[in-house]
Length: 208
Image 1: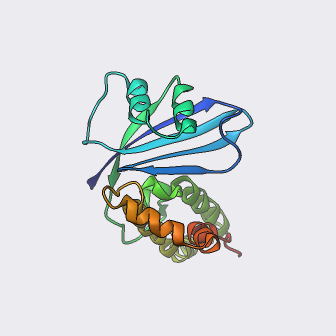
Image 2: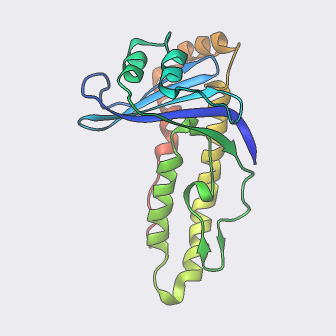
């Protein structure tokens, strides 16, 4: 296990006007801010920033407002509307060789922890749960079902782990090279950029 070099603020706030139904993500120097509407009157946001491991702030809300104080107006509005926030350091683990042992199965971050830069940690855990439920077919077939689970989930989830690390290198983890990345993104056709950014969302539940 090793520290990623980054820590993440997270909050859910009451909000009805700042954020629409789309997912918004902004990159800055060694930082990332994202927001997503989760109900008609609630928004989830996160701020992923470079910090030393175990670093503490006397006032986390003040710290996050100051950190993003020069960012876009929507970012400042979301942090200003925040009354409670949590922050966790982000750690990376070496890939596991398998997700099952006997009748034990690991899902989600227990099996394939990934950086938050792809936004697929919770999504992949839900996919795992659906897959386990579909593939374990009865008392006499648990072992077979778990083998099928590994066969169907290992490659996809490890690809997500790799993709999240790649996204971090060109996004939140990037420092001086932002100008070059931004120039290349401006030259990328919108359709190609959209396909590249969403291809990991293509997933079909297992069919028995």
